[in-house]
Image 1 (cartoon, rainbow, N blue to C red):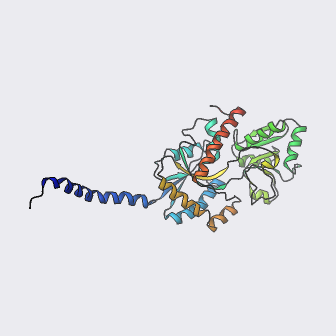
Image 2: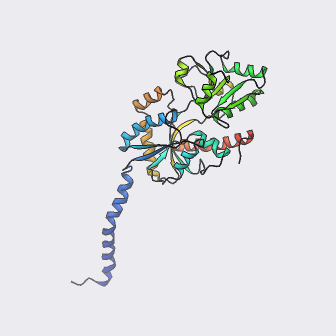
Image 3: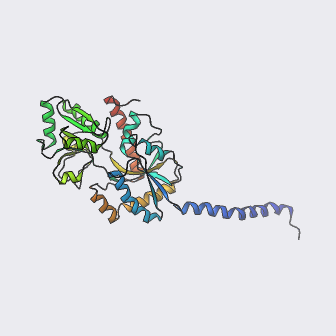
Length: 327
C-alpha cells in the first residue's frame, strides 16, 4: 500500500518521538535517582574538633536516608578558604558539597584574596548546629565573671593579655570591639589555633583565652567559662551569659552548615535539604551533638542563604571600620 505524501511528516514525527522516549525516560530517571553514587564531602578543617566531628555525626544519618556513602575529604588551611574554594569550583551536580564555616565566609574574603565570593559562589543547603566561641580564664583566676575582666582592664591599661586563634578571627574581632565599647586597652596575643591559645592560658602566659571550649578542661575545673560569644544561651552551658546580656551588638554567625557550588539544580538542593532536615531529628544525631556539647540549631536553605548574605555585609562594614580589611 502506498503512503500518501502528506502523511509522511506525521509518520516521521512519530518515529522520532519513539526514538527519543528512551532518552527522555533516562534523563528523568537520572534526576529522580539522585544520588546514585557516593558524595564527596569537603571539610575545610583538620580531622577532630567541633566542625569535623559534628559533620561526621550528621553524615552518618544522612547516608541512611540517601542510601549512599559520603567520602569525607579534609582540606584545611587559609582560614577555611582552601576547602571552601574547592566546594565552589566543583561540578554543580550535587556530588560535591561540604562545610562552609564562618572564618572562610566572613573574615578571609575581606582580609585576604580568596578565589570565591561567599554569597554568589555558594548555595546554602541547611544549618544543623552552632559552634561554641567563648571567653575563658584559668580555673584559679581571680576573674569570676566577664565584668571582672573589664574592670581589671580599665584599671590596668594594656596589662590584660588575651589570646585568640589568630589576627582577624572571631575571638580577636570580638575582644577588640569590647575594648572599643568599654574604652579600655587590651594586649592581643595571636596563636596558630584555639588549642595553642588555651595551652598558653593554662601555662599562665596570658590571662584570657577566646575560642572553642575544651569540655574536659572545663569539667576538671582547669578553665572557667565567662562568656559565650553566641546568639543564644547554650543548652550545655546554661549558666553562662551571652553577648546581648551585656549589651554588645556583635554578630555571631558561627553556624555548622552544609553548602554546595552555585548552579546546583533546585531538585537536588531540595533532596539534600530534606535529607539533612530529617537527619537533625534523628535521636542518634541529637545524642551525638550533645556528646560534643554543641547545640542543634536549624535553618533551611532559604533562611540560611539570607542569613549568610546579611552577615557578609555586616562583617564587611565591621572589618573595614576596624582597619582589618585589605580590600
